[in-house]
Amino acid sequence: MALVEREKNEANMTVVDKERGIKATARFDGCIHLDTSNIVDWDDEDEESVFNDPNNTGYLHICNIDNMIRFLTELKKHAESHFGPNWPD
Image (cartoon, rainbow, N blue to C red; front, side):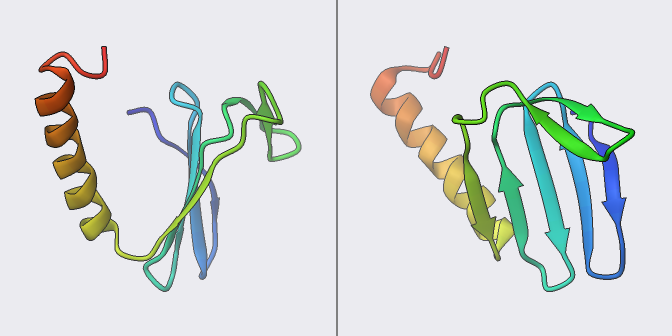
């Protein structure tokens, strides 16, 4: 994963993964904001994300990352059991 740190202050830290089109902000209170708005580039000059399709937006607010990781891992196992071991290919 190629995370690029974009913003950092006492309350937040933001990273961008251009390859996956994800921007994540970790907050001081342990919560995380995930923005899956299909980010294709980052304008370094303006510190603004540039979206491939502004209508393709997704947002998730997580306050227990470990619980979410466990849930997603279990979900993947169930989906592979249902759809086959090559899911989601």
